[in-house]
Length: 307
Image 1 (cartoon, rainbow, N blue to C red):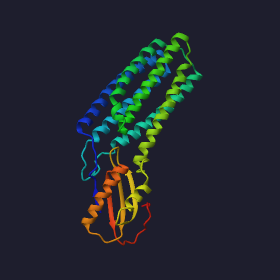
Image 2 (cartoon, helix red, strand yellow):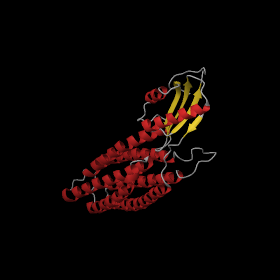
Image 3 (cartoon, one colour):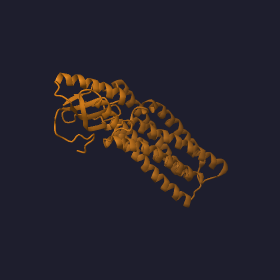
Image 4 (cartoon, rainbow, N blue to C red):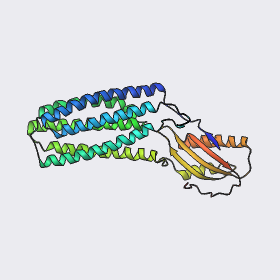
């Protein structure tokens, strides 16, 4: 069996340290916002402000999870952990997207109860604290935006913060409407809108992180196309026992059995393997290969076999 992984691209330590620093700053900012909004929400009686505080608290937890996952992902592999902690950030993304949805359901429940029992709200406090939330979360969003494009863990943290910034905008609008028009029912309405947005954003990330954890084939890869590409190369006769999975954002693995037309030398196989490696990397983005060569072996030659 030959194992090839020359196309593994990893982020530099400096970049990871920068991610960690940015996460640490956002954790501190969100702790400040959460405490301010809890106190303000209790004093003013605003549910949307308390719901924003609850969301901010979930941000603090999610950011701590992301921060720990970022630290773990730097740790080297060992004989007991041959993949190291490369999946730590995927697990963090899964946990954080799950909490987004759970928080949203709690918010909807609270908003429905508030509809049944409306209360007067001190809108001035709501307005000032929502402005604090917009400024602090807006700064946090800018810090994490770049890394969110390429890293599922950072995206989960970014989504928590972005939705929180939007929630603060909604709370500000609600505060202004309550102050100038005494429209208090806007408070639970905005809470429900925030909650639905959280569910919408969280579901997509939950689905993607679940796909990686369950070792599903990435959406961008067609197994039949890979099989056809490799089979065209002489002297390949058949490709079977194919498994493709994503370890994390940077690594996609392919393992397969290749049946050859003739009893080739190991040196010939190495040459063919290099060609396969180049093809699957440039065409499909696969950077880890694990190929078992065969000649005249009696086994099932189907494309994918359930082990």
